Image 1 (cartoon, rainbow, N blue to C red):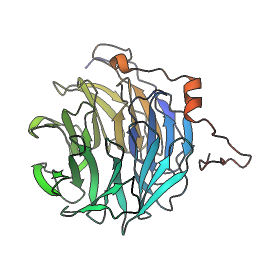
Image 2 (tube, helix red, strand yellow):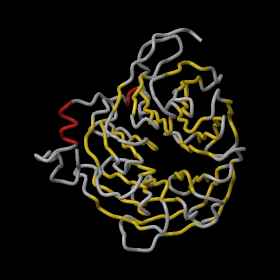
Image 3 (cartoon, rainbow, N blue to C red):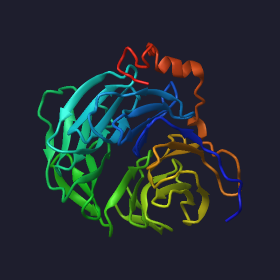
Image 4 (cartoon, rainbow, N blue to C red):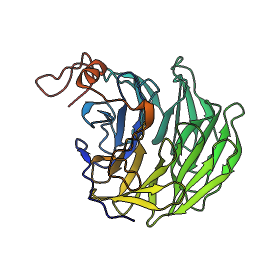
Length: 342
């Protein structure tokens, strides 16, 4: 591996406890955005390119384990140890809905259509809430072998992928029948499950291994052993590279075709719990036990330049961010008049 100058990331402060989940929005007319979940119970919204803080969703009474944004980045959802999942207005920070559970909620995901919210956690039950009918009882899917660690939509909301803290593998559920139709076998519990933005690959992290699966036929495509246990992995949008982070505090970039390490980024002062590529692939974010988010440039083999994600790359200007948070005002006490809190 060629020696390169150490990369200096954008460091995003603000959380007081470990970062446990990160999620980017797709690219919108106002750019793209990043939401973070933390054990401090204060999920935050940021400009996905610059890392600049936009607002904090204030209201949870316990650690927040999961956070996500819907397709147009107009709403955020969070999953919490306070036995609730909540939906927020991403423009104002207002809480729109709170869905009560009977135990800790570990993960949440908006459907592609943005009309449903998927949750899972310590109850070992997947729930699907209809956001157009928030008072209606959710659809419940039983049969998970343990606490649900990750749950994501797939196949235009026709299937769900879920992993458990207690057993290895990923279950593929048919939403129409609420039944398991496939199992993706792994030796260790999957701590990270991601569907690529083009819908072609599923990326999983289990133990010391990162695996890539065919998202249509569910066959194993590639499996790479990592230098250290990994907690999270993410595939570059055009599939040339992938990133992984884990207990050694480093964020590594690898070649997708060969598994060769391209770059090793050092800077966190605690284990890395989550990594995600930006929607265009020009950067990627990592969240750590040290309470910081770091945004890194994507480096290509033999190059010290940014890796640009193609025609979808968008520069977010000050005016665009201002439009995104129009009406956002900080009051004298440091809070805002619309639900956000500095």
